Amino acid sequence: MAFSNIDSINQIILSPSSEKKIKTTPNEAHTNFAEFLTQSLNEVNELEMKSHELTEKVVKGEEVDLHQVMIAAQKASISLQTTVEIRNKVVESYKEIMRMQM
Image (cartoon, rainbow, N blue to C red; front, side, top):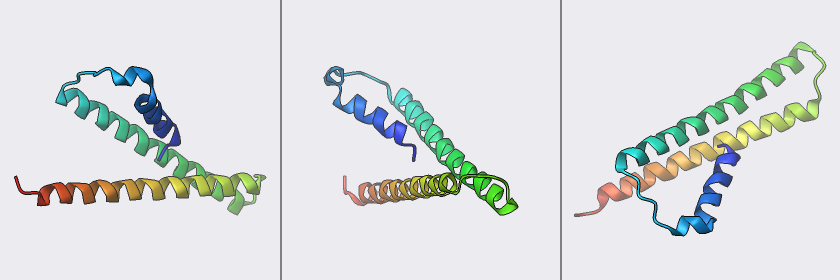
């Protein structure tokens, strides 16, 4: 997942101005969350595409720094693993909420 988004979230959570209650409607929260998710998934996809592009250049024999290829591959891998783990935690949380009796 994109680490810049995580930094943004931390800034919001840790900032002194966040102590003030900001009222948002459920619709606004839904929209903001959907936009955040879409942006994050697009960034993960971009990292994957960059990794594939650099790997193809190496395979074709084009002049590419191998270190950059490996770094791009690791960034894409870690980003995808993080995304999958977050997804798993969200699904697990949803299931737990659904098991609660009201």
